[in-house]
Length: 454
Image (tube, rainbow, N blue to C red; front, side, top):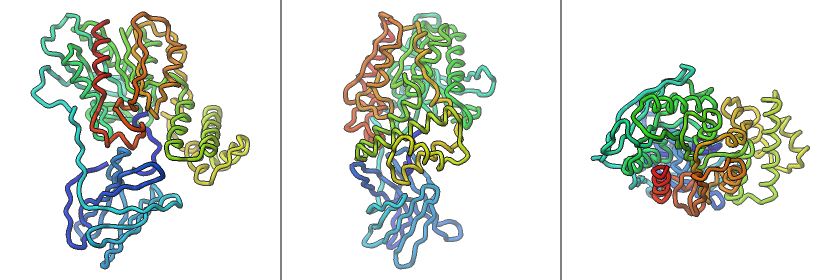
């Protein structure tokens, strides 16, 4: 999933001021953990009282402004701690560099910071003037507990009451703005621009509790997000100016598209699923962890043990809810599954068991199979072969078995693309921000051709 990554270290890129032997400014370095490389940025400043203040960003994991405590001695010794992540960085500033050891969960890694700044290049971001029109619109969740604000994009020469198709764009898991902005990319803005240039209207909106949209996000589940999307589809249908009305969903948004297609068939004329999950949530999450651990160089036996224990923990939570003593429960599950794991790994699983999260409770127990079997409209389901968050083999395979036959349905795996549909090397989440491409032009071309062909 695009936004609920269970990462421990977390984006920035700001101008830098460097003074003699003062670290005031921004400093960037690359943390090497096995085969993975992770950029970190530390920002040092002084408050009104002259005290040092600090924060950390992780551009490759999509996080910025993580609060940190910093102590700096007169002789250039620097200690940074981030209690929330169990992180410490002990270093020395000398000859214009900060050199030290980054520690987390008992492991230490050399980390050297350089003054400078990183530039994010996003060449696909559309620039004005645009050959289409946009306008701000609002619609309300059917339960009345969220007002969603979005951008309606109408292609050049749009005529009300004509055959112009329109798509509602639904983001992945977690809360994102209408552009589905993540890792410095704005995929929904890029897609909306491309569709408009090819005669297709679109509506993209801020998720509840984000941007201009209201509503409770903390306790919202996939079902709540589906109701928000359904309200968007009803808004477009009541508008009365469009031809066919469809939904284009990414990641969890693709799963939401399947839910609406199966439960509210009258609301949608076609579905475009971009890496939508077609298997039960706990299966998807276990596979995510398996691919992440394997890519990180974790030995196969340990990877298998961890995923077996995690699957058992999900099954326990689905059946019994959150236990009173998560660590004790995990020890019991580890014994039952013969999972030989270090204490740190079992602690991670315990956190999964004990953390209160309505979204997780719904998602891991939800199986989209039945909804998929009831879909009647044409479906375009796409995945990248290097998607490490929603496995193409697992999910497209499930779709092929469950989707009712339809001559206009197409299911395709694109070679070399990741979860964001970028051309990539490994598919790792850590690559997302480093890749300049926001969204594959080939995929956008195929989507536009397919929709216009309906």
